[in-house]
Image (cartoon, rainbow, N blue to C red):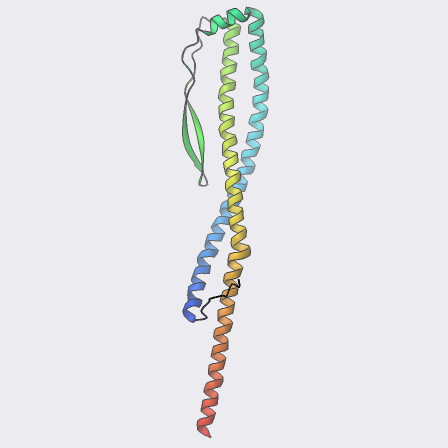
Length: 203
């Protein structure tokens, strides 16, 4: 269907369309700024995420080595017996946060297990490293969700900008040109008609 189908080529409709296109152009500029900021945020977040993953892998190796040392030093039965002295559980709270209008969950660690002083020093060291790893995994999961949601919003915003720039605005400009041409044509016809009427009266 043509963009000019059902269009009334009147001055009133022309003024209304010009006001609308100004609003759409401002909205498009805002979305382009949002798109660019989201792209910047995504790039920075991906760099941080890459660093966090690398750090986690290194710390996992340390935790595994510490845990292996505890098992070799104490034996599986003693390790299981001593770990029963660890009190409290990991308590988490999930809260919403927002960046550029993108809401994502953030995890707050309210409390961590208490490592008893009765634990063998080798096992206590392993336990501390394991709990540190758990905290890092939680934060990594939070950051991955943040990155995923920013990427989704970036895709949505980019599609909106493309639709506005390549479809909506060109159609509106075409309508404005169509109405202006029609009004110019009508004005020319009216001018010719008036000259013809004036010429007829003189004769």
